[in-house]
Image 1 (tube, rainbow, N blue to C red):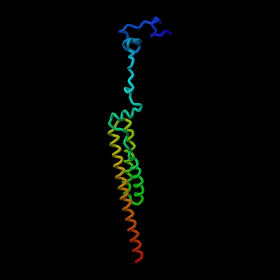
Image 2: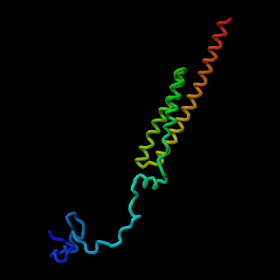
Image 3: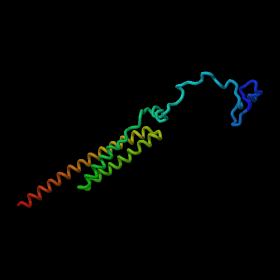
Image 4: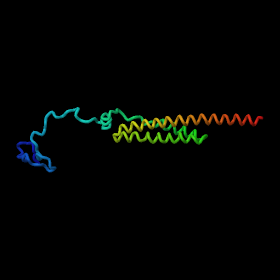
Amino acid sequence: MTNPYDPQSGYTPPPTGATDAYGQPGGAYQPGAYQPGAYQPGAYPAADPYQAQAQLGGYSAAPEAGTGWGIAACVVGAISSLSCCLGVVALALGVVALVKGSSVKSAWALGDFAGAQRNAEDAKRYGMIGTIVGGIFIVLSIIMWVAYFIFAVSASST
């Protein structure tokens, strides 16, 4: 095998108007194509492509998914639905919060930074509302049961 860069090998470069096997101009040998000092360390992208995407979108990291509020709303909703059927509202809000929270990372990975932020805010909002509503239903059901037992005891003693 001959070395095309060795002037003693007898290799002759193709004419300047020729194309190589891939249709690129200049053929296989392009005199002056190598530029000494062309390497620029800062010219290459970051090692993490998601970090580069996040910097382009103006966001530094994926937003918090808000699944903690969704889990809390589901637990409080399940507890409150044991004594009152209206607790299902809090349970449903917790499920909606979990679904919204699970879509945060997929939107972030697709590059939809505003959509990921919106889903995170919605998940947190629905989770907080579900937790508060479930807590209110628990307090109301405790008050109802205490009042029921007070009236049942007072009615049986007379």
